Length: 132
Image (tube, rainbow, N blue to C red; front, side, top):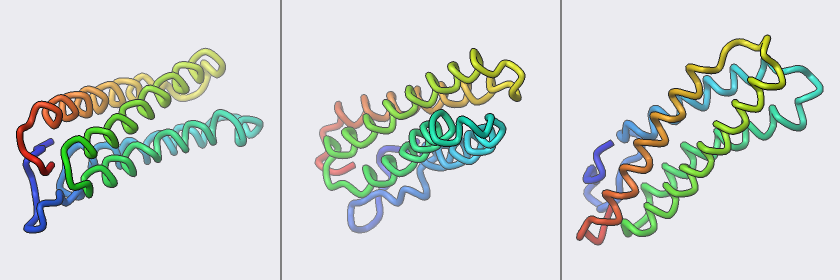
């Protein structure tokens, strides 16, 4: 989660960010979980979960390409809010489908990634550097 990792152009290579790597793995895990949901959720809860979790690594990558820390923090804010959307959707799944494979691990991992995102946002906002 090194906010000072930059390439020669001053833009971060998002592939090297631990936060992006974990978000990618998390997205795959949530996709796998969502495939266990009933077929009648395909266009509702399953689709919502997948859209929300997909936006997390996408926004991290897009933010890493920004020129300023303020812009990067803005995209991380989008990722943070998407993580909260995923968490709420997973909690709803627990209530609606208690027989589905336990998603406690997914909720915990989402919380850990949320903390990482929030920490990075704070670091970027307090940084005196003009680039991420």
